[in-house]
Length: 435
Image (cartoon, rainbow, N blue to C red):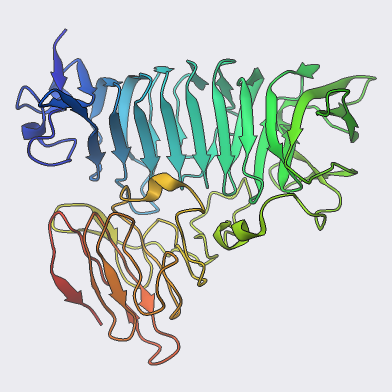
Protein backbone atom coordinates (compact mmCIF):
# COMPACT_ATOMS: atom_id res chain seq x y z
CA UNK A 1 0.00 0.00 0.00
CA UNK A 2 1.44 3.38 -1.04
CA UNK A 3 2.36 6.04 1.51
CA UNK A 4 3.02 9.73 0.92
CA UNK A 5 5.04 11.84 3.36
CA UNK A 6 4.55 15.46 4.32
CA UNK A 7 7.34 17.82 3.27
CA UNK A 8 5.63 21.19 3.62
CA UNK A 9 7.91 22.48 0.89
CA UNK A 10 5.34 24.83 -0.65
CA UNK A 11 2.93 25.87 2.13
CA UNK A 12 1.12 24.46 5.15
CA UNK A 13 -1.95 23.49 3.07
CA UNK A 14 -2.75 19.83 3.67
CA UNK A 15 -4.39 19.43 0.26
CA UNK A 16 -1.58 21.09 -1.72
CA UNK A 17 0.06 18.25 -3.67
CA UNK A 18 3.38 20.15 -3.70
CA UNK A 19 3.62 19.64 0.07
CA UNK A 20 3.85 15.84 -0.24
CA UNK A 21 6.76 13.60 -1.16
CA UNK A 22 4.97 12.23 -4.21
CA UNK A 23 3.79 15.65 -5.48
CA UNK A 24 0.31 14.19 -5.63
CA UNK A 25 -2.92 14.73 -3.72
CA UNK A 26 -2.95 13.04 -0.28
CA UNK A 27 -6.40 11.69 -1.11
CA UNK A 28 -4.84 9.32 -3.64
CA UNK A 29 -2.80 7.33 -1.12
CA UNK A 30 -3.54 4.60 1.36
CA UNK A 31 -1.58 6.40 4.08
CA UNK A 32 -0.64 10.04 4.62
CA UNK A 33 2.23 10.56 7.07
CA UNK A 34 2.89 13.88 8.81
CA UNK A 35 6.03 13.81 10.96
CA UNK A 36 8.87 16.14 11.85
CA UNK A 37 11.13 16.94 8.92
CA UNK A 38 14.90 16.49 9.24
CA UNK A 39 16.85 19.55 8.10
CA UNK A 40 20.67 19.49 8.34
CA UNK A 41 20.50 16.61 10.76
CA UNK A 42 17.93 18.29 13.04
CA UNK A 43 14.27 17.30 13.19
CA UNK A 44 11.99 20.30 12.78
CA UNK A 45 8.27 20.34 13.66
CA UNK A 46 5.86 19.93 10.76
CA UNK A 47 2.41 21.54 10.70
CA UNK A 48 -0.21 20.74 8.06
CA UNK A 49 -3.43 22.78 8.03
CA UNK A 50 -6.83 21.84 6.66
CA UNK A 51 -8.40 25.26 6.16
CA UNK A 52 -10.77 24.48 3.28
CA UNK A 53 -13.64 21.98 3.51
CA UNK A 54 -13.30 18.69 1.67
CA UNK A 55 -15.88 15.92 1.49
CA UNK A 56 -13.42 13.33 0.16
CA UNK A 57 -12.32 10.82 2.82
CA UNK A 58 -8.66 10.29 3.66
CA UNK A 59 -8.00 6.56 3.95
CA UNK A 60 -5.39 6.45 6.71
CA UNK A 61 -3.54 9.20 8.55
CA UNK A 62 -0.37 8.85 10.61
CA UNK A 63 0.91 11.70 12.78
CA UNK A 64 4.47 11.03 13.87
CA UNK A 65 6.79 12.70 16.38
CA UNK A 66 6.75 16.52 16.00
CA UNK A 67 3.98 16.28 13.42
CA UNK A 68 0.76 18.29 13.75
CA UNK A 69 -2.46 18.35 11.74
CA UNK A 70 -4.71 21.37 12.38
CA UNK A 71 -8.28 21.24 11.09
CA UNK A 72 -9.70 24.76 10.97
CA UNK A 73 -11.97 24.63 7.91
CA UNK A 74 -15.61 25.44 8.50
CA UNK A 75 -18.94 25.46 6.77
CA UNK A 76 -21.82 27.80 7.41
CA UNK A 77 -23.94 26.90 10.40
CA UNK A 78 -26.70 25.25 8.33
CA UNK A 79 -24.28 22.98 6.44
CA UNK A 80 -23.94 19.58 8.11
CA UNK A 81 -21.47 18.07 5.64
CA UNK A 82 -17.99 17.19 6.89
CA UNK A 83 -15.17 19.66 6.41
CA UNK A 84 -12.70 16.79 6.90
CA UNK A 85 -13.06 13.02 7.06
CA UNK A 86 -10.62 10.18 7.63
CA UNK A 87 -11.25 6.44 7.82
CA UNK A 88 -8.57 5.75 10.45
CA UNK A 89 -5.75 7.59 12.19
CA UNK A 90 -2.88 7.02 14.57
CA UNK A 91 -0.95 9.60 16.57
CA UNK A 92 2.48 8.66 17.84
CA UNK A 93 4.08 10.15 20.94
CA UNK A 94 4.95 13.76 20.19
CA UNK A 95 2.30 14.04 17.47
CA UNK A 96 -0.87 16.14 17.55
CA UNK A 97 -4.21 16.49 15.85
CA UNK A 98 -6.02 19.75 16.60
CA UNK A 99 -9.66 20.13 15.57
CA UNK A 100 -10.51 23.83 15.88
CA UNK A 101 -13.79 24.30 14.05
CA UNK A 102 -17.48 24.23 15.01
CA UNK A 103 -18.23 22.28 11.82
CA UNK A 104 -18.62 18.55 11.29
CA UNK A 105 -15.47 16.41 11.33
CA UNK A 106 -15.49 12.62 10.88
CA UNK A 107 -12.50 10.94 12.57
CA UNK A 108 -13.43 7.53 11.27
CA UNK A 109 -13.63 3.99 12.59
CA UNK A 110 -10.22 3.13 14.00
CA UNK A 111 -7.71 5.16 15.99
CA UNK A 112 -4.67 4.76 18.20
CA UNK A 113 -3.54 7.80 20.16
CA UNK A 114 -0.08 7.96 21.71
CA UNK A 115 0.23 11.72 21.34
CA UNK A 116 -2.66 14.17 21.75
CA UNK A 117 -6.05 14.85 20.19
CA UNK A 118 -7.33 18.36 20.94
CA UNK A 119 -10.87 19.48 20.11
CA UNK A 120 -11.63 23.20 20.43
CA UNK A 121 -14.84 25.16 19.90
CA UNK A 122 -16.86 22.20 18.73
CA UNK A 123 -20.09 21.20 20.44
CA UNK A 124 -20.96 17.70 19.34
CA UNK A 125 -19.89 17.79 15.70
CA UNK A 126 -16.81 15.56 15.92
CA UNK A 127 -17.80 12.01 15.03
CA UNK A 128 -16.08 8.74 15.86
CA UNK A 129 -17.77 6.01 13.85
CA UNK A 130 -17.27 3.36 16.55
CA UNK A 131 -17.58 5.85 19.46
CA UNK A 132 -14.19 4.84 20.84
CA UNK A 133 -10.78 6.37 21.54
CA UNK A 134 -7.87 3.95 21.93
CA UNK A 135 -4.30 4.32 23.14
CA UNK A 136 -2.39 5.86 26.03
CA UNK A 137 -2.24 9.46 24.86
CA UNK A 138 -4.20 12.58 25.77
CA UNK A 139 -7.63 13.96 24.85
CA UNK A 140 -8.03 17.73 25.34
CA UNK A 141 -11.49 19.30 25.15
CA UNK A 142 -11.58 23.11 25.08
CA UNK A 143 -15.04 24.70 24.87
CA UNK A 144 -16.22 21.48 23.27
CA UNK A 145 -18.57 18.53 23.69
CA UNK A 146 -17.56 15.04 22.62
CA UNK A 147 -20.19 12.32 22.46
CA UNK A 148 -23.89 12.52 23.21
CA UNK A 149 -26.61 10.84 25.25
CA UNK A 150 -27.15 8.29 22.48
CA UNK A 151 -23.50 7.95 21.47
CA UNK A 152 -21.17 8.17 24.47
CA UNK A 153 -17.45 7.77 23.86
CA UNK A 154 -15.56 4.81 25.31
CA UNK A 155 -12.16 6.16 26.35
CA UNK A 156 -9.36 3.65 26.73
CA UNK A 157 -8.40 3.08 30.38
CA UNK A 158 -4.83 4.19 29.59
CA UNK A 159 -5.80 7.60 28.17
CA UNK A 160 -5.80 10.93 30.02
CA UNK A 161 -8.53 13.52 29.49
CA UNK A 162 -8.40 17.28 30.11
CA UNK A 163 -11.59 19.38 30.24
CA UNK A 164 -11.47 23.16 29.93
CA UNK A 165 -13.75 26.09 29.13
CA UNK A 166 -17.28 24.70 29.38
CA UNK A 167 -16.44 21.28 27.96
CA UNK A 168 -18.37 18.03 28.29
CA UNK A 169 -17.36 14.42 27.75
CA UNK A 170 -20.03 11.73 27.48
CA UNK A 171 -18.21 8.62 28.68
CA UNK A 172 -19.08 5.02 27.93
CA UNK A 173 -19.67 2.13 30.33
CA UNK A 174 -16.58 1.76 32.54
CA UNK A 175 -14.74 3.75 29.88
CA UNK A 176 -13.77 7.11 31.40
CA UNK A 177 -10.02 6.89 30.80
CA UNK A 178 -7.11 6.62 33.23
CA UNK A 179 -7.68 10.16 34.45
CA UNK A 180 -9.84 13.22 33.89
CA UNK A 181 -8.41 16.63 34.83
CA UNK A 182 -10.82 19.55 35.25
CA UNK A 183 -9.89 23.18 34.73
CA UNK A 184 -10.86 24.61 38.11
CA UNK A 185 -11.67 28.07 36.75
CA UNK A 186 -14.34 27.05 34.25
CA UNK A 187 -17.46 24.91 34.22
CA UNK A 188 -16.84 21.41 32.85
CA UNK A 189 -18.88 18.21 32.94
CA UNK A 190 -18.15 14.49 32.89
CA UNK A 191 -21.29 12.50 31.98
CA UNK A 192 -21.19 8.94 33.30
CA UNK A 193 -23.04 5.91 32.00
CA UNK A 194 -24.61 5.41 35.44
CA UNK A 195 -24.76 1.61 35.41
CA UNK A 196 -21.29 1.15 36.89
CA UNK A 197 -20.83 0.34 40.55
CA UNK A 198 -17.34 1.80 41.03
CA UNK A 199 -15.45 4.21 38.77
CA UNK A 200 -11.70 3.99 39.39
CA UNK A 201 -10.72 6.79 37.01
CA UNK A 202 -8.54 9.36 38.80
CA UNK A 203 -10.36 12.71 38.79
CA UNK A 204 -8.02 15.67 39.26
CA UNK A 205 -8.46 19.35 40.12
CA UNK A 206 -12.14 18.97 41.00
CA UNK A 207 -13.65 22.26 42.20
CA UNK A 208 -17.03 23.86 42.77
CA UNK A 209 -17.21 24.39 39.00
CA UNK A 210 -16.77 20.69 38.18
CA UNK A 211 -19.92 18.78 37.38
CA UNK A 212 -20.63 15.08 37.20
CA UNK A 213 -23.74 13.83 35.46
CA UNK A 214 -25.66 10.61 34.93
CA UNK A 215 -26.69 9.90 31.34
CA UNK A 216 -30.48 10.07 31.40
CA UNK A 217 -30.79 7.85 28.33
CA UNK A 218 -29.81 4.78 30.36
CA UNK A 219 -32.76 4.84 32.76
CA UNK A 220 -30.66 5.47 35.87
CA UNK A 221 -32.18 8.03 38.25
CA UNK A 222 -29.89 9.27 41.05
CA UNK A 223 -31.63 10.24 44.27
CA UNK A 224 -28.71 11.65 46.28
CA UNK A 225 -24.95 12.17 46.11
CA UNK A 226 -22.48 12.71 48.93
CA UNK A 227 -18.74 13.33 49.15
CA UNK A 228 -16.76 11.19 51.59
CA UNK A 229 -13.15 11.97 52.50
CA UNK A 230 -10.79 9.03 52.07
CA UNK A 231 -7.93 8.22 54.44
CA UNK A 232 -5.31 9.44 51.95
CA UNK A 233 -6.90 12.89 51.61
CA UNK A 234 -8.71 12.14 48.36
CA UNK A 235 -12.49 11.98 48.16
CA UNK A 236 -15.15 9.59 46.97
CA UNK A 237 -18.49 10.65 45.53
CA UNK A 238 -21.19 8.12 46.41
CA UNK A 239 -24.31 8.39 44.25
CA UNK A 240 -27.47 6.56 45.24
CA UNK A 241 -29.17 5.32 42.08
CA UNK A 242 -32.15 3.46 43.54
CA UNK A 243 -32.89 -0.19 44.29
CA UNK A 244 -30.25 -0.09 47.04
CA UNK A 245 -27.55 0.47 44.44
CA UNK A 246 -24.78 3.03 44.46
CA UNK A 247 -22.29 4.43 41.99
CA UNK A 248 -18.98 5.41 43.59
CA UNK A 249 -16.27 7.64 42.11
CA UNK A 250 -13.49 6.64 44.49
CA UNK A 251 -10.42 8.67 43.41
CA UNK A 252 -11.25 12.38 43.44
CA UNK A 253 -8.40 14.86 43.89
CA UNK A 254 -9.74 18.32 44.68
CA UNK A 255 -8.27 21.67 43.64
CA UNK A 256 -6.10 23.49 46.18
CA UNK A 257 -8.25 25.21 48.78
CA UNK A 258 -11.47 23.46 47.80
CA UNK A 259 -13.37 21.27 50.25
CA UNK A 260 -16.41 19.44 48.85
CA UNK A 261 -19.70 19.96 50.59
CA UNK A 262 -23.33 19.20 49.97
CA UNK A 263 -24.48 18.49 46.42
CA UNK A 264 -27.61 19.10 44.40
CA UNK A 265 -29.05 16.92 41.62
CA UNK A 266 -30.98 18.58 38.81
CA UNK A 267 -32.47 17.16 35.65
CA UNK A 268 -31.63 19.28 32.63
CA UNK A 269 -33.50 19.80 29.38
CA UNK A 270 -31.67 16.91 27.73
CA UNK A 271 -32.80 14.52 30.47
CA UNK A 272 -29.42 14.06 32.16
CA UNK A 273 -28.93 14.36 35.91
CA UNK A 274 -26.34 16.97 36.90
CA UNK A 275 -24.55 16.58 40.23
CA UNK A 276 -23.23 19.97 41.33
CA UNK A 277 -21.80 21.66 44.37
CA UNK A 278 -24.77 23.00 46.34
CA UNK A 279 -22.93 26.18 47.40
CA UNK A 280 -21.14 27.33 44.28
CA UNK A 281 -20.26 30.63 45.97
CA UNK A 282 -17.57 28.89 48.01
CA UNK A 283 -13.97 29.50 46.97
CA UNK A 284 -12.90 26.93 44.39
CA UNK A 285 -9.21 27.21 45.17
CA UNK A 286 -8.19 28.49 41.74
CA UNK A 287 -5.93 31.50 41.52
CA UNK A 288 -7.91 34.78 41.25
CA UNK A 289 -5.79 35.85 38.29
CA UNK A 290 -7.45 33.10 36.28
CA UNK A 291 -10.81 34.84 36.47
CA UNK A 292 -10.04 37.23 33.63
CA UNK A 293 -9.01 34.39 31.37
CA UNK A 294 -11.88 32.07 32.19
CA UNK A 295 -14.79 31.26 29.92
CA UNK A 296 -17.40 33.07 31.98
CA UNK A 297 -18.66 35.01 28.92
CA UNK A 298 -19.58 31.71 27.32
CA UNK A 299 -23.27 31.00 27.71
CA UNK A 300 -23.21 27.41 26.50
CA UNK A 301 -25.01 24.78 28.47
CA UNK A 302 -23.22 21.50 27.99
CA UNK A 303 -26.06 20.24 25.79
CA UNK A 304 -26.50 23.50 23.87
CA UNK A 305 -25.06 23.03 20.39
CA UNK A 306 -26.31 26.35 19.04
CA UNK A 307 -24.05 28.98 17.54
CA UNK A 308 -23.96 31.27 20.54
CA UNK A 309 -20.45 32.58 20.84
CA UNK A 310 -18.15 32.89 23.79
CA UNK A 311 -19.57 36.32 24.49
CA UNK A 312 -23.14 35.12 24.32
CA UNK A 313 -24.00 36.75 20.99
CA UNK A 314 -25.75 34.66 18.37
CA UNK A 315 -24.00 33.95 15.10
CA UNK A 316 -26.66 34.40 12.45
CA UNK A 317 -26.58 32.04 9.51
CA UNK A 318 -25.85 33.33 6.03
CA UNK A 319 -24.14 32.47 2.81
CA UNK A 320 -20.43 31.71 2.70
CA UNK A 321 -17.85 33.25 0.45
CA UNK A 322 -14.33 31.97 -0.19
CA UNK A 323 -11.66 34.29 1.14
CA UNK A 324 -9.28 34.30 -1.84
CA UNK A 325 -9.76 30.53 -1.95
CA UNK A 326 -8.10 30.29 1.45
CA UNK A 327 -11.04 29.60 3.71
CA UNK A 328 -14.77 30.05 3.97
CA UNK A 329 -16.00 33.13 5.79
CA UNK A 330 -19.65 33.95 6.43
CA UNK A 331 -20.14 37.67 6.10
CA UNK A 332 -22.39 40.48 7.36
CA UNK A 333 -22.47 41.35 11.05
CA UNK A 334 -21.02 38.25 12.62
CA UNK A 335 -22.43 35.70 10.22
CA UNK A 336 -19.79 33.07 10.74
CA UNK A 337 -20.37 29.85 12.60
CA UNK A 338 -17.48 30.28 15.00
CA UNK A 339 -17.20 31.74 18.49
CA UNK A 340 -16.40 35.32 19.41
CA UNK A 341 -13.36 36.05 21.54
CA UNK A 342 -12.51 38.73 24.04
CA UNK A 343 -15.42 41.10 24.44
CA UNK A 344 -14.01 42.11 27.82
CA UNK A 345 -10.71 43.87 28.34
CA UNK A 346 -9.20 40.66 29.68
CA UNK A 347 -9.58 39.36 26.16
CA UNK A 348 -8.37 35.95 25.14
CA UNK A 349 -4.92 35.92 26.66
CA UNK A 350 -2.36 33.17 26.57
CA UNK A 351 -3.19 31.92 30.05
CA UNK A 352 -6.87 31.43 29.42
CA UNK A 353 -8.78 29.04 27.23
CA UNK A 354 -6.29 26.84 25.45
CA UNK A 355 -2.78 27.57 24.30
CA UNK A 356 -3.11 25.86 20.94
CA UNK A 357 -5.42 28.56 19.59
CA UNK A 358 -2.29 30.60 19.01
CA UNK A 359 -1.46 30.58 15.34
CA UNK A 360 -3.89 27.76 14.65
CA UNK A 361 -7.15 29.40 13.71
CA UNK A 362 -7.92 30.57 10.21
CA UNK A 363 -11.58 31.55 10.59
CA UNK A 364 -12.47 33.61 13.62
CA UNK A 365 -14.94 36.40 14.12
CA UNK A 366 -15.09 38.75 17.04
CA UNK A 367 -16.91 41.68 18.47
CA UNK A 368 -15.09 44.23 20.57
CA UNK A 369 -16.32 47.41 22.16
CA UNK A 370 -13.14 49.46 22.32
CA UNK A 371 -11.68 46.96 24.77
CA UNK A 372 -8.42 45.09 24.70
CA UNK A 373 -8.52 42.31 22.14
CA UNK A 374 -6.73 39.10 23.08
CA UNK A 375 -5.47 40.86 26.19
CA UNK A 376 -3.34 43.47 24.43
CA UNK A 377 -3.46 47.26 24.19
CA UNK A 378 -6.69 49.21 24.15
CA UNK A 379 -5.95 50.67 20.73
CA UNK A 380 -5.05 47.59 18.78
CA UNK A 381 -5.56 43.87 19.27
CA UNK A 382 -3.11 41.23 18.19
CA UNK A 383 -4.53 38.91 15.54
CA UNK A 384 -3.35 35.70 17.12
CA UNK A 385 -0.17 34.85 18.93
CA UNK A 386 2.47 34.52 16.27
CA UNK A 387 0.63 36.93 13.99
CA UNK A 388 1.19 40.59 13.43
CA UNK A 389 -2.40 41.56 12.79
CA UNK A 390 -4.31 44.37 14.42
CA UNK A 391 -7.69 46.01 14.24
CA UNK A 392 -8.46 49.70 14.26
CA UNK A 393 -11.93 49.95 15.78
CA UNK A 394 -12.16 53.66 15.05
CA UNK A 395 -11.76 53.34 11.30
CA UNK A 396 -13.15 49.80 11.03
CA UNK A 397 -10.04 48.58 9.29
CA UNK A 398 -7.96 45.53 9.82
CA UNK A 399 -4.58 44.31 8.79
CA UNK A 400 -2.80 41.20 9.85
CA UNK A 401 -0.75 38.13 9.32
CA UNK A 402 -0.39 34.53 10.46
CA UNK A 403 -3.73 33.02 9.48
CA UNK A 404 -6.01 35.65 10.95
CA UNK A 405 -9.59 36.21 9.86
CA UNK A 406 -11.76 38.75 11.58
CA UNK A 407 -15.19 40.23 11.12
CA UNK A 408 -17.79 42.43 12.71
CA UNK A 409 -15.71 44.80 14.81
CA UNK A 410 -18.08 47.31 16.37
CA UNK A 411 -17.13 50.73 17.67
CA UNK A 412 -20.26 51.26 19.74
CA UNK A 413 -18.53 53.99 21.70
CA UNK A 414 -18.44 56.31 18.68
CA UNK A 415 -20.18 55.80 15.36
CA UNK A 416 -21.98 52.57 16.16
CA UNK A 417 -21.11 51.25 12.72
CA UNK A 418 -19.99 47.72 12.06
CA UNK A 419 -17.15 46.49 9.94
CA UNK A 420 -16.89 43.14 8.28
CA UNK A 421 -13.15 42.90 7.84
CA UNK A 422 -10.64 40.14 7.46
CA UNK A 423 -6.97 39.58 6.78
CA UNK A 424 -5.16 36.40 5.92
CA UNK A 425 -1.38 36.40 6.08
CA UNK A 426 -0.64 33.60 3.67
CA UNK A 427 -2.72 35.16 0.92
CA UNK A 428 -3.12 38.81 1.77
CA UNK A 429 -0.80 41.10 3.70
CA UNK A 430 -2.74 44.17 2.71
CA UNK A 431 -4.87 46.65 4.55
CA UNK A 432 -8.62 46.27 4.07
CA UNK A 433 -11.53 48.41 5.15
CA UNK A 434 -15.19 47.59 4.78
CA UNK A 435 -18.24 49.61 5.69
